[in-house]
Length: 128
Image (cartoon, rainbow, N blue to C red; front, top):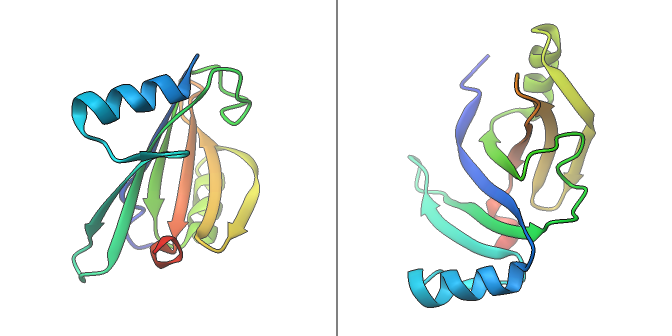
């Protein structure tokens, strides 16, 4: 199997007031924020447009379940379907089923501490 993780796709965290947090990061750190947080654009080794997302989420979100953590990491991966199969064979806990959207495929696993990790096979051009 080729490289598994190709980069950080995003960092998501719970907060009482996502809009207040986004405004603070915009004002003090200059993050260009929108309803989803802030998107960072960069180029991969082949010069393709790529994105990484920073997103504060309402503290009552159920998106991180079954994890009880206040954060979730998203890793960019190649060939998600193959990777999920390999991870299952390695005994990694897989959460739910792979989902596909116009901007890529998503799958979820749990790390040894029970943190939910999102795996994303991106189609960055869908965001442009």
